[in-house]
Image (cartoon, rainbow, N blue to C red):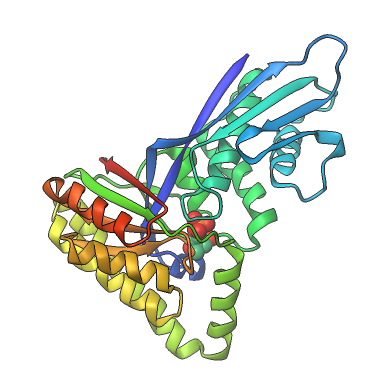
Length: 311
Ligand code: PMV
């Protein structure tokens, strides 16, 4: 039997603009994970059985729809590993990550499946190959992904990421205390991404300058992470949120949580990921963690995750 897991992720700065070639910064959430167990099938059974009890799914690979996300992750992995002969295995997937919420659930599921299957078949992969395979799976479901999700999840390190460039792990000199509030509104990444593309195509000047502005915020944030200036990072998060709001990517639920976090003492707060639902992220000092957590819950957060990120 082989067990492998993968972390969730949060984008600290630069979502959306990263699709248009600007830099972004993302961090792994190592305490919130997806786990995949692979074991040989009982004698007499043949094929690949996929169980995901958290989402009430259990099916055979050969019976799955062509676009089923779990089945495509398995098929692509077997293809990329050049597994030609039929294999008889049972995969069980458990995830602590809410689906379609900005925490990288699809990338984490893919990376954990690839790690578990490649390990089980005696074909372990380098992290770059792992990330590339997960990117192929992301492309099937997300159209034009920047590649930031699969990268940060596969490397499990804070990264400074520019599309089609080698990801740069970034040092974080002072640990970051982050509180994540889940609006409970699930939002497929493709919806805000394609809406933004339509708006950008209609008005490339305005949207282009917003992407530029986000790019500048990300570069400043990288320096502030290096020197450990937590207060400045909070200010930069608020600036990034303001541009995301201008672009129409926030929502009433996100606004409510962002405001609650700021008013209860967070240094900064913003949506994280695709937006229009999903999660928001607040940066806090250790002594305000509980106050901000309570404020988020009172303001309607369906789940709250507290995490510390270091470099
Ligand atoms: O919502 P998520 O976690 O899938 O993040 C999407 C991030 C975007 O920048 C909006 C899209 C991308 O491919 O980078």
